[in-house]
Image (cartoon, rainbow, N blue to C red; front, side):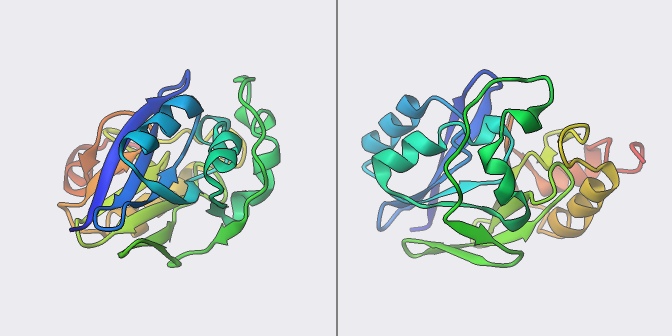
Length: 213
């Protein structure tokens, strides 16, 4: 018995929202509820989950728009990386020309590097992976192994760095020192697009194999 992962593609930007649940206790995290709260809540009910925490990998609107609705329905607190917490109240403004989305309630828990998040009998570790935003985080589950990378790392891509708080050099450093040090067989669940593995991205991702420097 370990961690079950269900992927829900939500919102106009097709954000990956994840339900990460302890298979034994059915306690769950909702990771990046970007929109379509009804879809997310329907999946929670279908899987008979008890949501213990809402985790935002970063504060961009397409990852937080459903925070308020999910929190109201489940009573779960909201957690986010410490340096992104102040931006939750202004997700429209930080999205550049993409003027949509809704402000989130304030975070109830501020996450720091290497902090542990316990859900049921499973434990995930916070990895500080700034660059897409100043306080971006990833969540690593060692037993699988798997990592929720937010918008830091995609299959054959990386997150944008031309929005609020973005910095290309910082993002590449985060990927190389925090994500690429994970085992090669680690499954990567990104904020958008299909899953991949750390090994595959180390071999083929053009932004972090040298060609993108």
